[in-house]
Amino acid sequence: MQLVTVGTVAFDRIETPFGKVDKVVGGAATYISLAASFFTDGVGLVSVVGEDFPEETMNEMRRRGIDLKGLEVLKGKESFFWAGRYHYDMNSRDTLETRLNVLLDLDPELPEEYRSAQYLMLGNLDPAVQAKVLEQMSPRPAMVVMDTMNFWMDSALEKLENVIANVDILAINDAEARQLSGEHSLVKAAKKIMAMGPTYLVVKKGEHGALLFSDDRVFFAPALPLEDIVDPTGAGDTFAGGFMGFLARTGDHSFENLKRAIIVGSALASFCCERFGIERLLQIEREDIDRRVQEFIELVDFDIELVAD
Amino acid sequence: MQLVTVGTVAFDRIETPFGKVDKVVGGAATYISLAASFFTDGVGLVSVVGEDFPEETMNEMRRRGIDLKGLEVLKGKESFFWAGRYHYDMNSRDTLETRLNVLLDLDPELPEEYRSAQYLMLGNLDPAVQAKVLEQMSPRPAMVVMDTMNFWMDSALEKLENVIANVDILAINDAEARQLSGEHSLVKAAKKIMAMGPTYLVVKKGEHGALLFSDDRVFFAPALPLEDIVDPTGAGDTFAGGFMGFLARTGDHSFENLKRAIIVGSALASFCCERFGIERLLQIEREDIDRRVQEFIELVDFDIELVAD
Image (spheres, rainbow over the protein chains, first blue to last red):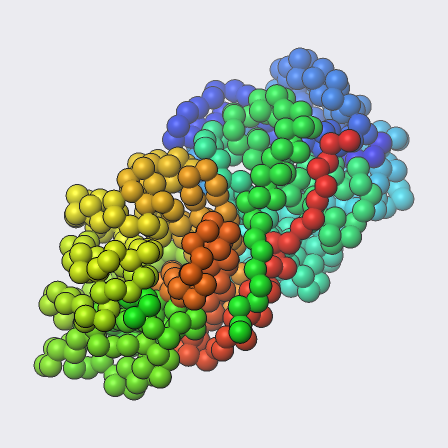
């Protein structure tokens, strides 16, 4: 296995100002593994679902080279369910309902062939579960990326900090970066968070793009302005999956290549927003991603001589 | 005169979560003309102030080549005053107090030598005043850029639309672009707004950067991530002034050069945020702007081969 991810595999009910769906397949690990599968065949998924999870989706994932040996299916139980409603700006949302269901039973035992993967993506989950996955990896992966959310900062900060101390890249949104650091300035927040352990910080800003911080460098990638944003659910996970998949494919962990991975992740995330759930990710091909990367190049391209004269 | 701007010249009281000032010089035309003066000596300012406006500030502006023949000083009256408080995110604010004072008397008669300027910046004001300034220009300027705000969309939409129909570039923020067009998607909003008259739309997104739309092209410039954002007041006007000043200096209205002007405007706006009011703009030199432009180049620079293989 080249890339292992742990995270939710779930059903979502989604309401936006422009439409709604009652029950679509979602979950962080679903988006992460689908996005990564465009770049590598060796994706292993660690999660748990109930008997209600569609066999059709699992087969589609397998067709895309995603290994589901790490996906436990619990008989007689229901999959994790999340319902949310987006505000008019589509960049913020309220959670309407959360049914943990099988998530209460998630206590991952990694299949043997997952444990030596070089790339590990810890999707947003209880940091105790993230730690348990990381501990089972041997040798330690070359690159560990982690997502989390404000809920764990409020309820399990110490455990969370212990995991953060052991990852290479933390990828969270701007509000989370501010909360975790206690700093309003993202530049200062990045310094504090990198001092907690990670070599890099990725700050996801939704429709406002993403920032990559390292020791003394910063890179910004915009989000592509879209004609229609149908549903942002999963865009951050799709971004992370594309980012990880690209790194796994190229095997290059230089800052220059991390920037490329950010652009590839952003391109994939832009597709994700064009339909509800995973629908759009299942429609596109590698060539579509390439065309979109080209749009990113054109979006930010400028050529300026220094202006003093 | 090469560039004429009309807008407020005022006093501001500003509160942010991190500090406050009781009375500093502000106003759209103040920021616009100061920013433009880095690039051209022929800036004419059209506005009105009261007897209370500091002679020292006016002298500083004159030293920077800003012509104040168009700035009326009304004896026995007070300058326009605005007070506002920023939210924690520093990207939104509430108006606490507005004292129009002399602004009620603003009925600009342009000095003869202003009327043939090639560049006109209509700062945010009553669209009737903006129209009156535009009508006095002869021949029509080569480039007219206009700012406005939601207040005029709510209270004087028809007059506003008449001015918008006659400008080359409308430069407003994202919420205003959405309100004016009735479209959530900025891509769709841009199309609708350009159909109202302007050849270009600039969407200012504060700390999230700026977008430039033309017929079928789009360019994105980020805002520079700053260690400390002290006060965003005037950043949008500083952006517009730097944009206009750069265009006036270069005389090149191609899309490629508009992109450069956006970067230069963004660089100037980033300085503006580093201190309250106009303080920082009075400290910097052209060389500082150049260095910051270089930071923008590095911020968005990436080099990617198309990924399909």
